Every structure is written in structure tokens, then in C-alpha cells.
Image 1 (cartoon, rainbow, N blue to C red):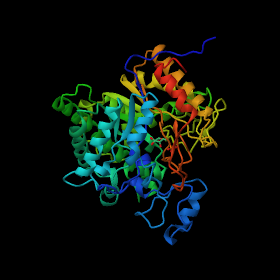
Image 2: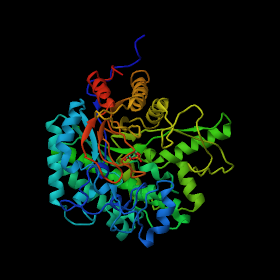
Image 3: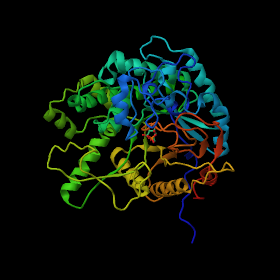
Image 4: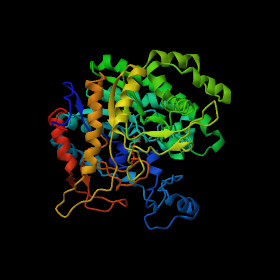
Length: 504
Ligand code: BGP
């Protein structure tokens, strides 16, 4: 019996995805400023000599057990900052893009490092050396026939905007972000058609996580009791800035004469299922979905959902939604929705009618799903479910800009890597995506897995949590030859892309 598979529409984008701070390295080259990623230590080996400075001794000891990445006040002598080196893609991109082109990819997603363009974020003029670098970078991609898909803000905002302005809680960030957006869209808008604003803006729904609050909103040094209100306030400023970025994209589209230029939001989509068929569990899961994806409602529908405005009022949260903001949001909804997909979750009800959903409460394992070594529940059917849920809700074309399987890969003596577990993960997810496209009629623009090449894990700072179809011989301390080797998944993906989805 032939294996089930479906051909994707002509022009479908088969690519891969990454992010500047996770693979470029060159953290202080050509005028680049310090980003929030540059002050995050590795979760597995935070101090290169194994000795934590006195001021960080307690936090280091507490974090090691869970690979929790310590955020330092500044770049500290002796710290192991894996994002400082990444895989040196800043210099190796010509060779690495050629390797990825050989895989047959016609698209690649990455971010522009905001701090290469505005090192501190509040300068009047951009850093020309940074702009010139990405000129060469995008020109190389286009010369290879690889369509750039670009994230404006991928967990790498200028750290100066955190320490000097308090991050996105400060409305001034809207101006800093829109200035940066206008500069890069006017510079690259003739060559780069697919853009998106804030990576996984909704991660901060889990506002009890210091990492997610820093990575999404540059929030640091706040009282735990203020965390939820701060998250909503910062999110509002991010959403207004995102809508203004859509407006700028439409202006630049005309100015540079690129009719394909379009701007998306970017959501981390991991479905939340009810623990049982008990209606109380269903109601909890329903609200948990709304509390985790309302950012998509504002970006795609142009207004806040009523339940959330009620929630702000009930909790006396001061979120400064002005009439001008409401008009900006309403007039500038996104052109398409970009999202990441890795796993799904399960929650049960509690007795709070205002349902303050948090993944650290009433969270259950899904007895029908297996987990990765990092506990991520593997759910390919959930990808089809999510595509249907989002299309029904937001009525926008969609692009899968992250889907991947982090694993400890083994480099064999003959330099082969047998990652059949990663091939299976992608086979199952691609099949469900193809069902959504062909059977459910969902308009999916492309599949850009995380990732074409190994890089630094965002949550743990590990190099050994590998996602790539291309292996990079480096470890968590940055030791190794740095050589690239093709995994078995490289050849599998090459066949899939060349068949436009039928050779699963
Ligand atoms: C998403 C991020 C990516 C990447 C991915 C894998 O949340 O958008 O940047 O990090 O997760 O997760 P991790 O790197 O934590 O293993």
C-alpha cells in the first residue's frame, strides 16, 4: 500500500528556520550592540572555569538542576555566553547557504539582529556596517534562489532598552521599534518579501517565567506580584508597534515596488486539550487557548476580545489602550500569520471562574503521546488541529516557520548521523500539514522547519539539544571542529522537497 502523502501547491515554500542570536555568533562585530541574548549564560555550563563569581553563586547553584539560564546584569568575565559564538554563521553563511540549497530549499527564515542596526536601540542613526552586512547576506540568499523570510525581533532586543527604559513596559519602545522597522524595510524591502514582527509574542502568557518575560518584553527586575499586569502592559505596546510595522510594510511595498511584500505576526502555537470530557475541563481548556492566543486575535482581527477587557477590569490592570491605539490596531491587521509548532499540552479545571491559566498549574501528561528528552509532548495531529483552529478564527493565510525535534545526536566514526527519530517527527508533522492543506482546504504558504542547521537552544543555551538536518561539530562550551556534516534527515528532506511533498 503506498504511503499516504499529498503534493503541495506550486510555489509552496520548503525551507528551514533559525534566528540571528542562536547561530550568527559575532556578538560584538562590526558595531553590534549587546542584546538580551548576550547576557544569558548557558544552562548546562554557566561559568567557563566552573567558578561562579560571588554575586551569582546562589543563583548559579539553584539554576543548574533545571538547566535554567542565568541572566547576568552585564557581560561578566568568565561567563559561558553561547550566543556570543553561535555556530559563527555570521562568517560561514555563504558555505552554509550552499549546503542548504543543495538540500533543495527555496526559502530560509532568520532574524535581523536589531543590535546590528541600532546597537543600543535608541540611536538617531543606524549602524551602516550592520546594514551593509545584511545587504551581502540577503544578496547571497537570492543568488542561490533562496527566498528570505525575516523576523524583526527574535528574543534579541537591545539590552540598553531593558536597563535604560525598562523594556516594553515603556511606551517609548514603540518609536524605537518602528524606526528600526522603517530603516530595514526601506533597505531590504525590494529583495525581502516575507516579514514578521515579534517572535512567539504569546510565550509571555506564562508570565511566571523570568526568561519568557525577558525574551518577549525585555522585562527584568520587577516584583513577582506585578508580573501579570506588566506582561499585559508590555504586550499592548508590542501589539501597537506590530500594527505600525504592518502600516510601514504597506507604505514601503508601494515605495519600492514590491507587490509581494507582506507582514505577519508570529505566534507559538501549542494546542491545549482538556484533561477529561468533564465540561469544567473543556471550559478551562477553552479559556486557556484564548489566554494563550489572544495576541493573534488583536493582530489578525484588529481588536481586543471582550473577555480580556473584562479580565483587565476585574483585576484592576492598568493597560493604557488609547483611542489612537484602537484605530491603529483596527486599520493594520496582519497580511498572514506565521507560527511555530512543537508540541501540545493538557490542563484540567480549577474552581476560579476567571480562569487564570498557567502551565505550572493543573497541567497533565497526555497518556496518548510520547515526549522528547526535554519533555515536549510529540503531537503531529495537533498540527492539523491547530491549522484548522487558527484559520477558522483568523481567516488568514499561514506559514509554519518553526517545527522541529530537539535531540542528542551521535556523530559516528564515519561522520554520519542516524537521526531516524527526527525523520519520523517531521514525516508525521508534514503528513498532517498536507492533510490540512488538501483535505481541510487550509491555505498554508510554506513549511520552514526548525532547523536546517544545528544552533544554540534558546531555553537551555545547549548546543547539544540539536535540531538541524546539518550537524555542527561543537559542544555546550563551544569546543569542537565546527565542521558541518549531513545527517540522515538531510537526505530525507532533500527527497521530500524535490517531490514537493509526495516522497514522505
Ligand atoms: C522557539 C523559538 C526558537 C527556538 C525553538 C526551540 O520557542 O522561537 O528560537 O529556540 O523554540 O526551542 P529551544 O531552542 O528552547 O530548544
